[in-house]
Image (tube, rainbow, N blue to C red; front, side, top):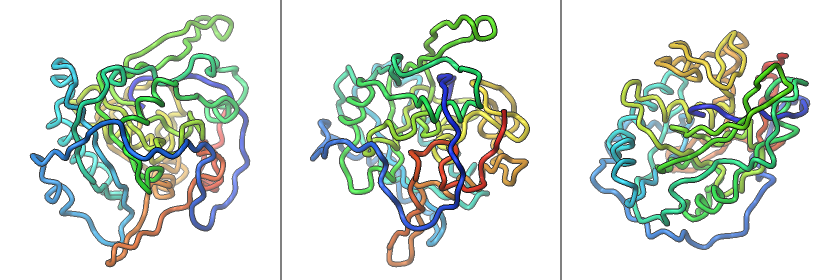
Length: 325
């Protein structure tokens, strides 16, 4: 996720192979018949041109973009729609070498209740500082972060009910998305609660596991356009689809690290490596539950869904996970 994420604690899960079709996520919300927002399509963006390079049979991710019409003018300046389209096109290029393609389903606009345009991402009560026992991914499996009630209410309002909600990625433009975390002050004895205002947040399952309602688990929030590198969307899609934190090759997961190597670090890097030396990033990407392959008739075959809530060591990844201290 863009900016930092919470240090939390949890247990290792055993690895195993995966086979078969999808299962449903453990957390499901009550059925919702319609969104509370009157959305309309933005027809000034040529979706046909954006999707003109899609190929039959290739691994594909469906992505929708919600851009509220009542964002504050200052927020619009920081996050112009044209900038998001530019970043989406760049994300397609970044992921192209992996064989994964992105389909932009639509761009929609509408008036959103202003209280939903600024949220805190998670609940303080469920977050713990790092206990130091097991790596970050292991700790998160025991104590996954939980989405705040305000965030759940916002996304339940914004994201329209659809048959493939849990398999679709939703880019949602917002004004402020605050991420709480704990900062180690002196080697593990004293911790200070901190809050950062994120530029993008992917609500990844390696942190949240199955605590997010199934219908809205594909959400990614955006609050600031990366005018320099144009990589915020690509970076957040990396978190969501590869299901990894800020890491790259010999760099183990960290809250923040800046480098021009690797998409999952902060900087200008776009590399998505493969193999054990690449921390299995390409392999994990290609196993994402958000990916399908469609035939000429449009029939879609989805990847298997998560079997253990989507934690880093979820069995769908088999051996494509790094064991580290």
